[in-house]
Image (cartoon, rainbow over the protein chains, first blue to last red):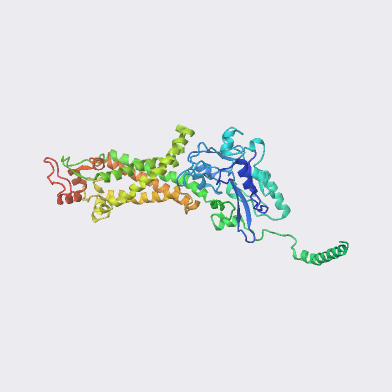
Length: 198
Length: 337
């Protein structure tokens, strides 16, 4: 099976936020929640870089390890998903996540968190594939339709890559060789405990 | 219009000459290979300098501007490994000690028997404050332990769905019972502060094992050194639990993820130690000592119990005329004071 990963080529990201918008629209993500976001580092200074970030679907995912009710599971494609039926909204996955991916709709007084929501790699949840119940909780299941995540598919500069880790790493390596520079695969060391040698 | 054409041609010629004049210069200024990354931010260097990479975003959620904070991995180790060891050793260790102590020492008896006369130890308000805090604490303790140990101990027994339902209600109970608990800790602090300041007698009490380990009955005021330790454990431990708990309950009110991780670590460590200390408190207040539960049950204790465990307090009560003094019943040994 493929091991699905995200790779954001920061030298290509133009901070257009189309990935953010596409994700929100595709999955009808609730108000106030962004499964994907673009962060610009050193904004306005020479050498600023923008990185599109969502759940990286980590190897040995920390969110999954700390969940007090074990609501996470990793699919055969290496996608980290969770069950909103089991989630109790405790916030522990958010403390553990290196990428700030888990988010919670605010449902009550104080900081009472609802069921956690995060990027599903467009792969839905534990429900039957492509059902209404799955769509309402997790959004569209593009993987079940044989498609890759929409954020990467419609990236105008092809900065954001999604797909099998080895293939997207190869594409990135070829780019780097051709253009002669690279600012690295952001988040890979933290998420996958590996970098792409360039 | 007709006389515009030569003008346009002239303009084009001027532009062409200009470009021709510039381009060799421009080419000469460009290095053979451009590295636009010469000044760019590097992930590895940023992570080495600071534990989190932060930037600017364009959505209203400002906390999403933190790009990466690998410190979550350390917190994960704490939560999944360190805290379980601390909690397991503290709580099981305390239970073992208490069981062993009960088997060896048994219940601390009233050596002079009961006099049949009682005096008020805790009034209704004090007992209300105690039990409000105690009931909250027990539920908070069990639901808190569920978060750390539940998935290992309870989940395999009752299944994922039932465990999730229980944990959700446990979370609500944990959040809302924090209020009576915190109010109780504040009231305990205010109500009993006067009797819980350290005095010289405390050292002697501790040296003589408080009459619990040995059979001596060192003098003590209204609260002996052991009770003072429990009092300060409740006030300081309860205070730390309340502060760290409310930090977690109000996420991102003046805190970031790193601070919430710290708050959770404080909450976890103090929590399991608190449970261990309270196990000892519950033991000595129930099966560990004859006559002790009455103090918090009915509020009245036997005069002989007071004489054996809180002699200075009884003397003060007698001096004030709040209780009539009488020798211990004949035929029984005098208190070993």
